[in-house]
Image 1 (tube, rainbow, N blue to C red):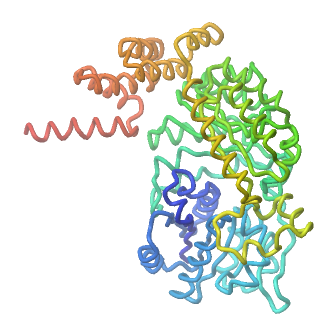
Image 2: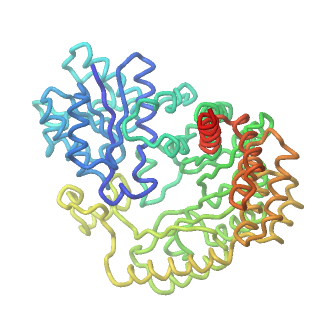
Length: 527
């Protein structure tokens, strides 16, 4: 039985570097199926038009189609299901993901092309479903954690006990090699090391999807995945997409120590909360290659933060930003506007906070409704929105407010961020302070070198990169940055030497592969 695990973003998301990627969860399900001998495959149709998508579906003709559904791509997901059923009425279509989990009943009542919905965590449930269908079983009632149609309407089976040891999950990247429409290097940059969130933000559905208890992969498991991806595919930059990567302080410290001890030599970023970091932790993270951390700041107004259920204060934001800057880690912030009751004085508080914390990057989002959130359920109960909001409308997002204030506040926040980020980038004196506080770490040198390059100070940039190469000749970042610098400034012999070193250390790195290909091409032409 052929199994296709598919994702297609909405139209706008196809051009977005993040929304266009497949969800990491599909990779885990695919890996679990493959480990058990199933003929499964991942397909990302985000950048494919519908004619090409239909042709690919027809070529694959899966017996089971698994679709990852979010609110933004809920209509595209339904169209995928309809196409699969049109080509093969016997195809079993199962939905999963955050939107499907929280709107399972509505989906199954309205969409006859969807046969079942997996509720929450999907690996074990999908595997059991596939095993049952492969044996010709027609009873879905025995499979925990699903919803399906029956003679009695929509039935929900008992919830599945969540996986206890996430280290037992296979690495998704092991089975990406035959994926359809997947940008491997871009996709493998993103990894997940935990599940669950103990916070109670009213705009987020994560706690109800994964649960409020946080399950953590071990530092050893994380490092082995990073090593595998580095060695097999040449990546040396990663993005850890946990809701709160720094939730367990000792785990973070051990992870950093392992990266340093075993000389993994990567750069990385992560997400966290402002009340879940401290100076020592951030120092260790920077030494281990963390170059950016993203905080859900949302607002500078205590009233707005309370309305959102954030359980943080503006003072905690300032403190976290201060120690982040002391460590020399770039600070990125998420901001939300358009909150019920938000006024001009709240906006002004946020604008002031942005200027104080010196963010190097940021995003602004109007507050939106999503299924499975306390915000949506509270608004339905109060009669503010319809309970069939997501089925009756075709918008990609449903914003809480659409009044002039929201458009104006979004514009002002983005403008403020643009000004602040231009002024907040670390400068020479900052790098000197960071080196005094932390000692040598290659992430500081890389950031300093990039700063000097932006100012046209080539010799200073060269000195930063060269220090990495001298101190840590087995660190690919020194050779990579030197090679790019020499190539840009017209020193081809030096650039070739550095790329040769890089190719010896990380043969599958894109720059190394290009250099090797160019070198071999030159040899062939000489022959």
